[in-house]
Length: 322
Image (cartoon, rainbow, N blue to C red; front, top):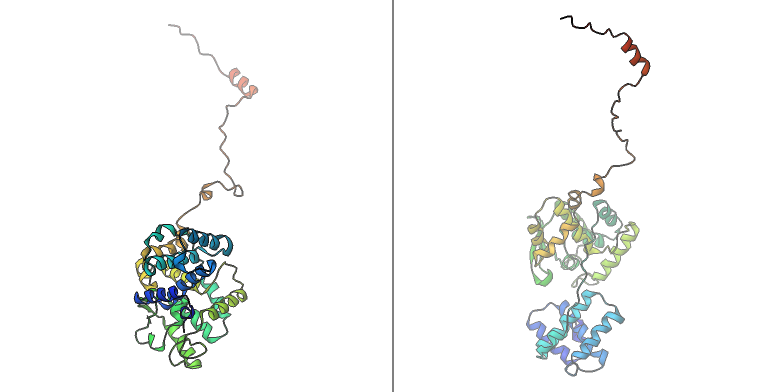
């Protein structure tokens, strides 16, 4: 039973049914119903009795007291909009539930040496294989965890992603080194269905388990960069592909981005981006370097003895005798 099925609010159950009719993923249904359930419990009233003023108070509560991220804030906005517009049929809520402006941040990218250090600190074969797959193929963590044995096509050197974001399937190339590592991992664990199973073989491993393992490996590898997560390996893959000369459109398709604009963020973190932008300080004279002295113009000789001697030895010309 998924979390949203445990929520007893009748409007939440109807909202979940509306989302299933529109083929929303179970994760999205869980997230949206969680926010609506929290909204109703905050006022201890059913959703149909809450209006624009209560929505505004709840949004201020999320920002001022809960201090949620803007991603979580906007997810709550999407949930409330769907509840009122679709489930309750009240279109007036759209203009009363504003989105928050998310800060635009550049992704954290690991160097090849940092990624190698991180992977070396993962001593659990399953954790190592998962993060290696994310780094070698640019997968999201959820995509790697939902891989099944049949999704690895060793004959064509590719991986079939069937549980992509938005339920969009795609195919990504798999390097021979990655395929060898996955074969060695399979020989150790021999999973029957999911490539990375959880406590039972019929469910994938929990994302929280991998995130904790990654955080511990980052600390052991002494990587000081902020917010290094499994998703950082996906960012590192995309940046490495861009620096290797792969065009941006191909990278966008391989990553499964719905918008080409999303992929353009990696233009700001590639190394060539900095190499082609010199600093004005490079044009300033460097004081530590030896300087060429300005040539001094030669002045006429002012030696009086030499001048007098020259005048004495000079014979005046004879006058013209006609």
